[in-house]
Length: 258
Image (cartoon, rainbow, N blue to C red; front, side, top):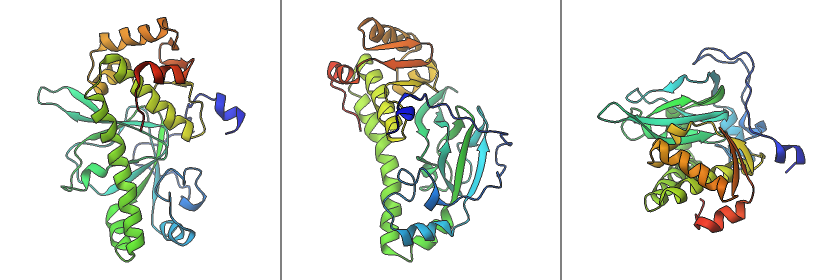
């Protein structure tokens, strides 16, 4: 990992952001993308990646606070996050929002629409973002012609589902400190894989959104952050986090990270 990247705080800046849904006009080739080892082409050979390159993959901006798709909308695309961060949420019976996912560059979204043909959640940009939209019908049709491609696509989709479910299953049996520690360690690991510092970063989610995601009250989230700081495990300045000793945080709560 380059030294500069190790100390960088992952702030995504997208110039001249267009309205949601607008294409940038830039050509998108998976084979030359800096995220190819994390995204859809991961594990594909050159011939398979070339096949992906021949697909019509749209590329567009989504501004901070805008939705990419909404709960109940017709499913058409799988989305790959090219830059920035999204949250997935569902509407509860009482009208409250429940955060059910956090997606960053190189990760896939929209898979919740495959089962019933409509999206089961709403995806909202937490900052200015850029996505690639992959037409699922075309992907499904073409991958059906190659057993190896079909296995590869299924594996990549399963990876995204298992990643989220594994984290949520772990959280179900943890206390407040263990939940927040696991969340931060999971985020740290994902940032490291993208060439960013695993120790110092800026949270894209608010305290309230973190609480919704982890099943904690806002007051509990704030109190737990303060407790971590008092224990010397991290320094906290609003949304800016600096983990002073990741190994100590891991040992303190024995929080496995997937």
